[in-house]
Length: 240
Image 1 (cartoon, one colour):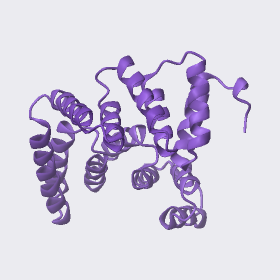
Image 2 (tube, helix red, strand yellow):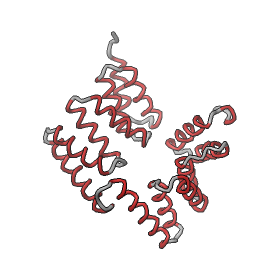
Image 3 (cartoon, helix red, strand yellow):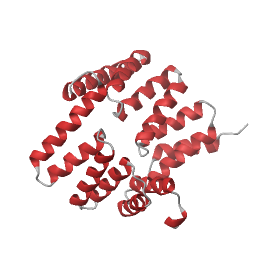
Image 4 (tube, one colour):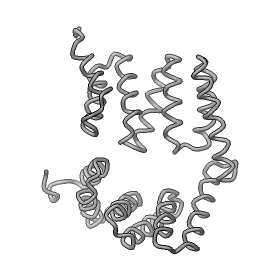
């Protein structure tokens, strides 16, 4: 592993995220703290530091990091939610309820239409209808329903991945790739989305890109049978 002093702040953050995805919270926390020590005052770095501390059992330390993230970005919904969960675990139930309410208010404002709980119900209904259309062989109608859901809740990545699947079935590979890239930008450990991205790249003729995505799946989970099968398929095919 490269010495921390030799890495840029962005490299430290990226390495910390990789460690987080592997479940190595000690290594991730060290990289995030090293980045912060170099004056990297990014809300997401403090939020990830808090998540690491929470996984390591330091709830008070986690709470301080979430608070710092919120100070840097008062509209950071995930940090508000993580703070609420931590307060609840500490038994500070009234404060937790207030934090949940704040997150809900921000999410409602982000969706710009419906209250938090009602918005989630509407999103679930759109997604369920999309599932039925996709199962019934109507990907265009499925994509419309999934698109409505994603417009309301852009961070519901499972639905965004389904939207990409509908685009794939329509043959709109550019749109599918865009949705999957956005999904992985928000959660690099979403294996199902990465598998689909590999398939999209393969269908676009980018064998090297597809192989890269499937190898990344195996780096994250060596027991991913589908990624292994896709790579074996590539290896058995002649190249131009």
